[in-house]
Length: 312
Image 1 (cartoon, rainbow, N blue to C red):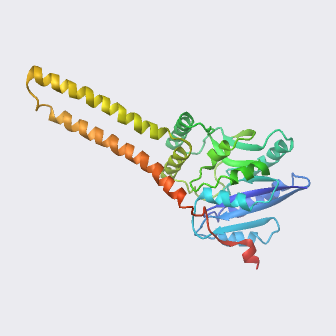
Image 2 (spheres, one colour; image 1 turned 90 degrees about the vertical axis):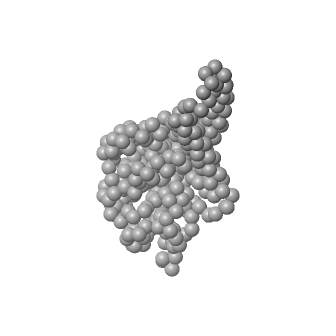
Image 3 (cartoon, one colour; image 1 turned 120 degrees about the horizontal axis):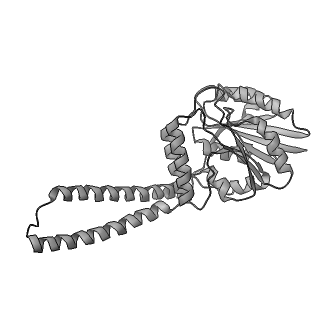
């Protein structure tokens, strides 16, 4: 009998967690001779999410992990994958934006043996602010141009994987994680399912525009060294421009004899070069900061409580 583990990261999801559980119970009826385990991961929620997890864990198919604080969704996904015991493992959001009804089709595709992973992508962003959708599309175009690891436009974290692929993902123990890139980097045969965007069943998204922007920077630093090359190109370019300007100033002085004029333009040039220098320093600083965090070897997450502790 096959077993499917559902990893569900949760951060202040008290409004949807029970709705999610009920939907999964409906979906389970479509499966024959398949066991399910639902692993809720409480990522330092400040509402009643943990309390609801404790109640749901009284059911045989529910387990939970509760962090000591908020470590982020990436850490929650990693913790859930580590705790999973199924032959197949799925990552899903509790807000029902990842349609549970797709699980049946995903399972049948993996059972055929042709693929190691079935991933999902949104073909529309209906319901999202236009500016957010615009920058999201531009981000995917940018990351795929500067990175050797393909990041599919509209890709969700929602996917069903074989145990072999899950073990490969877990072998990458980096502290600064970007799972969409990691899933692509480990390889394996992946089937993509497309679906229309689904709005949250209840509650509000925890991802503000600024958080998404920072997350996009994390992905660029994690899977591309192109920004470092850009900093080097800026350095070479401005050295060349400075050399040309020096020659022009010398020639101008010899011909017209007025070496002190043009200070406003010189001030603008100084500000421009100063800005580029700060930009390049910031780019290098991003890579250094990630390296600094990696060499500390801090744990990706800390568990404060699990369903086993609560039952005891």
